[in-house]
Image (cartoon, rainbow, N blue to C red; front, side, top):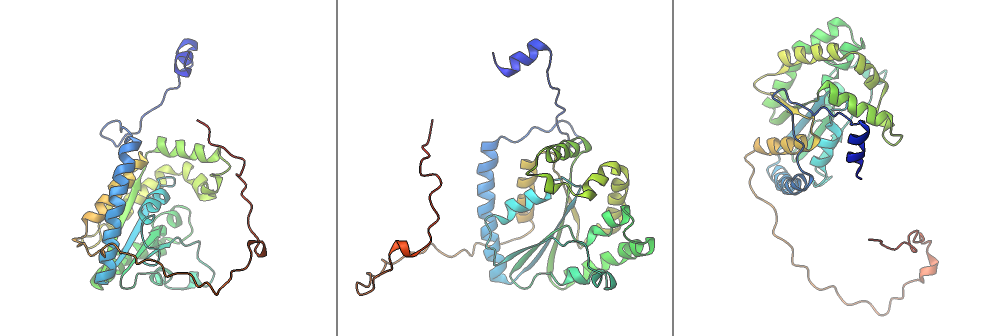
Length: 292
């Protein structure tokens, strides 16, 4: 008897509420389709990066959203195939005592992209509109100064030729709680559950209000906010990458495959040192055999 049949017999049937995007239940994408489409889109990301480097474009991506919305996973799928020499991930910790005395945007401006670079902010200057405001880490004057100066700051970046694209990953309260519980019950994932995450569970309404106000002031024509429904992580990954690629009229400037010449013959006069001269890590799996 299967576990499902046993559950029905005993009456212990687990009720699962499917995620929703407000239009109805969301069906998870099948894993096989997701993996094939991800490979295709990641190949396009490589094409896109070659074009960014060739043209000397400057790309700045901002990822914001609820705690446990899946920002890290989405960024990971995006960065995986790219040349690390041309892409930088910026995830800043809380400001130092010196940084607190600087112009607010100063420490973020230091990480903006140079020609041919892609910079991804995993949380950004929008900390002031979210966690700093909700948790009281900034004054009301500092908060409203940010709301009025941020659009001007971003317009300046766009006028300078930087491609500024902002993503907000949206997750429902039920799905967020499910992910929180999964992290809390797994020692390998507890590092993802910060003290701020725990407080955010009790301040859902305050964070919703802060997000709505932020959108009202900073969703400008020069730098729009693009919201991604992230209750289904697979859909979020694919939708984000596909949307990003759609924002650029990039051309295929990938180099042609290399035809490697045969390796030159070994220099018989050179004798390499014996293997025993090196410290070799032992094969810890020498006795392991694959089982069906």
